Length: 254
Image 1 (cartoon, rainbow, N blue to C red):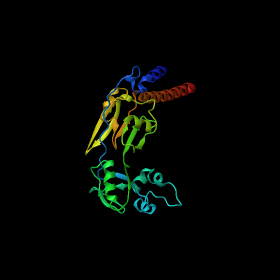
Image 2: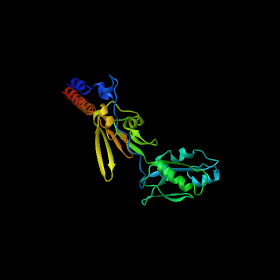
Image 3: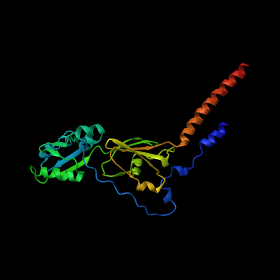
Image 4: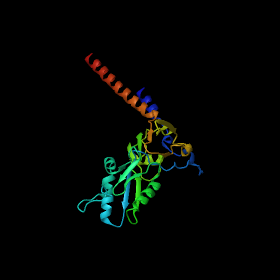
């Protein structure tokens, strides 16, 4: 009985772990969904803002958190490499939409995308500085990947767009128990959370509203039925082993 249960619980086709199944045999053209609109800065966003000029002393005043002293090393990577450092050294947009920058003062960046924000900061900087170079990035663009992936966790994106497949690659790929047909993406829109179900074995994923992920999306790859069956068979095996041991002891004593 236990042997039969083992074979049943272990029965899963390797095809269940293959993405892009519709494209394996023949080349095909897929009309993918367009990338989402560029992120608009909103209150409580955390921004990396760099203002550089030809004057090193001015640069130190404008970028106090990123300019290493002569006796230290690390610079930008040290200041922004870890989540805690991002929030300590980034510029958090206030509830009234203001970012306060050294020398430049208060600037309203809410409602602008990152390119537009760079342009607005540059216009303000040109009132005080000669030929300033501006860079603005979003530090809180993070994706939560959990479930049947090799390394679940929070992953930060600084490239603008990130697809579901990019997120899975960041988490080192799927496990042998992944259920690719019932992947869940949860997205917050205002005060509401929307749940999407995606089949990663089907080309329809390219047309999904969540093919391109947005900041704070949660991607959950559920376990297949096989994992539960294996867990149950392990429980049954331990139970039968215990019963067998007790039976042997009883027989011996008899």
